[in-house]
Image 1 (cartoon, one colour):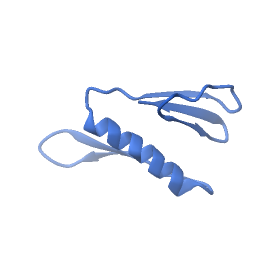
Image 2 (tube, one colour):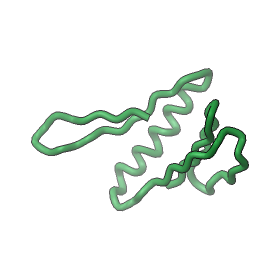
Image 3 (tube, helix red, strand yellow):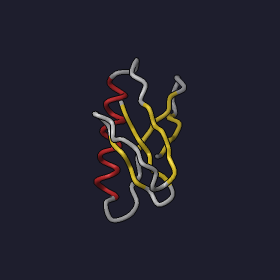
Image 4 (cartoon, helix red, strand yellow):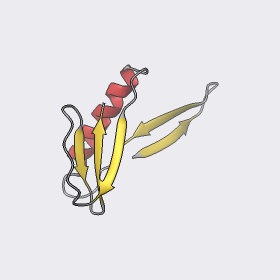
Length: 77
């Protein structure tokens, strides 16, 4: 995940995604689409839960599971 402050009269930030590994672009695109959905609905609060790698988790109906070397991230809108 990438975060940066934007210059301007209001205090604003921008959230983005940087992918790594063989599926880097696909992962970054999927994560960015979740960020864009959250941006369109500011009342919406996305949920990100981190588990140890290999933990048994149930994929959410909407959202995704991201398997990393040391963890599994579950993103749900």
